[in-house]
Each structure stands twice: as C-alpha cells, then as structure tokens.
Length: 246
Image (cartoon, rainbow, N blue to C red; front, top):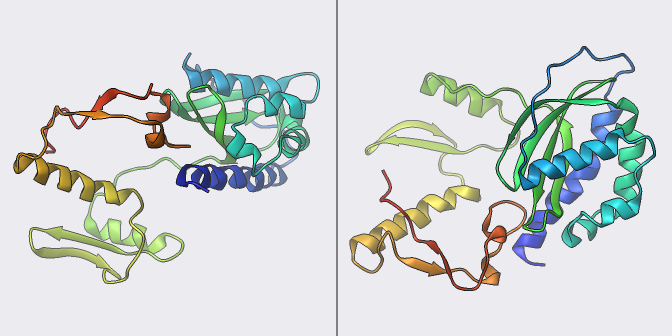
C-alpha cells in the first residue's frame, strides 16, 4: 500500500468511529438555535453541501449515492453500505442542520454543523481533483485555539497533551524549553523544515534557484491532504519557491 493510500485509510477508518461516537453522545433534547454561515462555492464546499443535502433529505441515503462520491481508497476501508447505514442511523435523526462555522481551501474543509437534536459536531472533509471524498470525519467540535503568551504556558499545554510528548526550543544555542527532548520520535510534517533547509543550502551553493521549475509527475500526487492531486501532470507545473525563507 502506498503512503497516499495509507493516509486515506487512516482517515477512512477514523470516520467509522467518529460517526458512531458523535451520535451516541448526542442528547435527546433540542439544541439552541444557531447563526448560520455561508458555505463557499468551491469544490470541497460543494461536496459539503452535497453531504448536508443527504443528511436532510426526506428519504434515507443509499449506498449507491456514496459509492459514486467516495474515493476507491476510502471504499477499500469503509464500504458504502456501512457509510450509508451510519449516516441514516446516527446523523439523519438530528436534521435539519445549520452550518455555524466553516474553514477550508479548494480541497479541504472543516464545517461545524448544529442539528435540531444533540450537540454540534465538526465535519472534516478532503476531496481529490474529481471531487471524490478521500477523507471524511464527523467528530466533536474543535475548541477555539488561542496562542500561548509565554514559554511556561507552552510547557503546560505540552504537559496536558495525551500520549508521549517531546519538545525542544532553542534561542540561539541556549535551551529555552525542553520536554523529554532526547527521546526519539517521528517528525511528521516537521520534516519539511529540514527539506527547506536543504533547499536553502542548495540555493546558496548554486545548485538550485528559487524560481527553478520542477517537473510534476503522477507519482508526486498525494492523498488525502495537500493539493498536488489537483494539478495537471506531466510537465513543469510548479516552482521550487517564490522567495527565500525568512
């Protein structure tokens, strides 16, 4: 299985647990009226609207409707029959829904939905260039994020996180904050900083330039996050960078 399929599988599997947890925790009391926001006319915004229409339709949604819009990597982990059953049984009873918050790009979005019953929930959605769903999660509304005002607060927030946490903050060569800093751990997206540093070194040595064109190929497409999958390979479609890092 490719990395793209593994990433899609993770989100797909999470959708099942989130669907069940979201509805089972909903109380049987009416929710307070909520102010609505507009869903933008973007590819992912249109798919969000499609999902809401299925949640609010008079008749139950069918597996065939979902099979046409779910990416094959999603369907390989969660069959359309299971998605339709969970949506009909767990979410549709809370219709109608109001979109109270929305954040997104062309292919990724998080919409907060408030139903007639139960607590609001977040719909996190990612699609590919053909508007097929590569990731879909219904879960609790994310708490608003506020920046920390001091390193002490950062350290406390790190201590409150679940699981094992490692962190190291340096000011020049001086250690400003360390939390289990010597423990080896996966880098996740932090590896991009090392890639950027390597590119900056290559530019400084004359091996690259910031406006050098790169060739985008089919193997460079990624799912579910990112936007390379919406580009048109093959050929020079992207640039190394537009300006040096600050």
